[in-house]
Image (cartoon, rainbow, N blue to C red; front, side, top):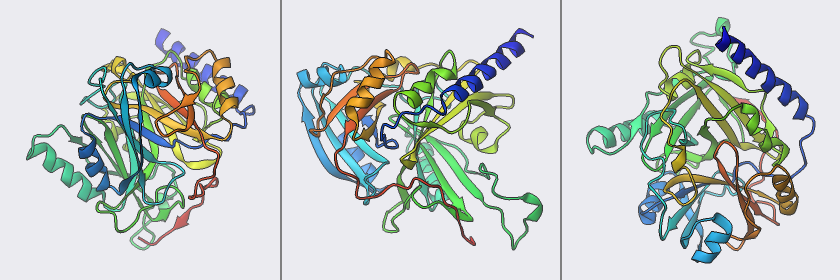
Length: 373
């Protein structure tokens, strides 16, 4: 009875707090997630690796030990490479960081829903080919990759099942996760529809994959309401109130390899200035391995994400007002004014000042274009 009461109390708090702040989102001009920032001990390998997904180096930079300490709080120099998928420069980039003296191994290879894990999500035109490749790496090369079986679902509930047959085919998405040592992939392939601006694939790309479309975190917090600083300090929009889902949905059950009866809290956020670059947070209900101590800046793996804005000072003021741990404003390795801070869920963020608009104009409205495949 106590557990049931706690569940409904948390649900009430989440919905109440969501309702209180949904109409008071500050106009920060914040982007969707600009970069997923990965610390690596072999930059040339990962530059070659992500090139197969369509990413190429568009910039590089360096910071000495004192500069790194001032911005990132890490006593180590660094070399960075910014990677972009084709001409998509408004969101979905990757930054590779090479620390001279990394602080630890990072979250590393771990089972699904390990606290501290983060996931890179991209669209593909051939998910079966991708999973076959990672299965080969796992079973024939004994590399640390754990691919899940692709699963088809209609998470947006576009299809009315009573109307489907061979000629009126179901619309939906096939998705799969690939858990790895430095990062975890999630791939999805659409069937029957497209959303312009949300996953752009150049046919010349070797693996028929897009920029990063959205990003997943596995977290542990006292309440999902602790994530609301993303709305009140950064100006992101909560998709809806936090909710509990899990094994009742085919997609999450397959991607997170959930057993019957397992669930998690879910909360999503999106920029009002870009439908892409979404944030998705999952908090498992029940015991899970916890490696969140290794998600700190300076360790290997995916430990940081960036946004950009023309209102850097305004966001800086809002973040400090929330009492969050924040660096001073200083130039990053690409000579961009920026600051870094950490949220209560353990995620670290870099906010970058960008004076010019991106060449790739982001979409701010979700449009569905139905296809016949």
